[in-house]
Length: 285
Image (cartoon, rainbow, N blue to C red; front, top):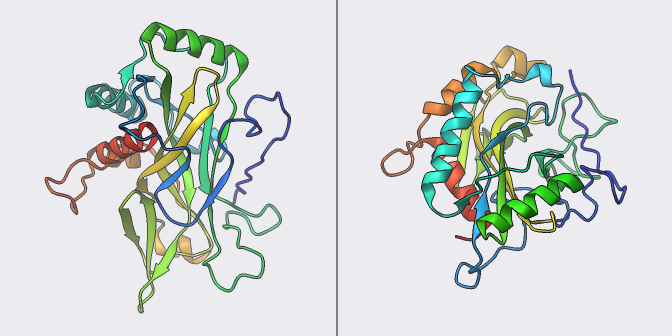
């Protein structure tokens, strides 16, 4: 078992620190999963740019437990599809020259866990009765100064006042119980809920393939951050019964590339809906 520890660094100059990152940490019980100021489309006339979608391997656990993104892998193909769709939306402008140096802002979204508690279990609020106090933690780490300098130059070249930095990664989401029969579900994002097996543990989070993103200004500070889940890895009943957790592999990435939202008109691809919601939620467009 692995413990997910979300450490908030307080060093004023440390890359990855959430201190003075632009948007403060936020604890959320339900979607939509966003924090920061939401620009009004009518008032926000500045051009918003975007970078190609990235991939962060090992955002909440050791990278060896997550799929690779080398050439020819499902993740590499998925990243190409995500970027092409982002370019096609026309809501933001592609930044031709991506920052070449340093570390980009790191948006983190996962179930908050207790380092002193059992491995892989979501933390519960003090004095809680049941699972209602389990929360999700949304935060953003500061980019490095080199990245900020390169990003500002790239935005100037594109005549953009801010830009979106979107990443595909794996997070840990809480399991909820609803209804008289106690059906189990995971709230993946904006108006997107999926059911999971009834015997799934409420304490153990499930792995979710998700998109996280930040709208960043020329000073490198985040103006708004958010997350939209794409696919929850359902854990088999025998494994869940002993508190185990199934991992997302290449097979789940392939599944995410073709899964459709059967609850929506036209049954669009799940990832296209998630990406479109994220762009709208971050940009206000």
